[in-house]
Length: 160
Image 1 (cartoon, helix red, strand yellow):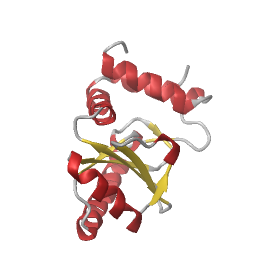
Image 2 (image 1 turned 180 degrees about the horizontal axis):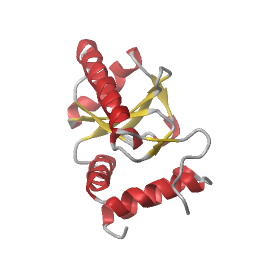
Image 3 (image 1 turned 90 degrees about the vertical axis):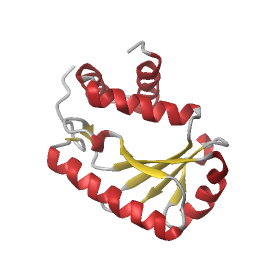
């Protein structure tokens, strides 16, 4: 299956990754000003050149266990709570309807979701074959969230 861009999708470039890093810096500053604890990093398709994306920016906020409640209380000052049905006591999702759209996944450091985010994107940065599979998954369409979930599980457990 070809990983060429389909309608609504684009391949990230060095320039678009640089732009995403600029967005990251702006959000880090905003979180600091709002008193939101944690380490904010760039993740997702916008973080690596050559990946298919819709142009949104995915950020990952890693917090200490004692800071999770503080973070999810402060984040609504800047973002809208999203996907509440998948939240857990150590994982939450927020979004900002900006241009480009920004999503923030909040995880407690060392928990299942945190390890999954960190390890899968670490591997994506170094594994060209994984990046090709990721693009093919996005180009194929279908139930993307379920497919991406299986793909990232396999990246982390070493079966991909």
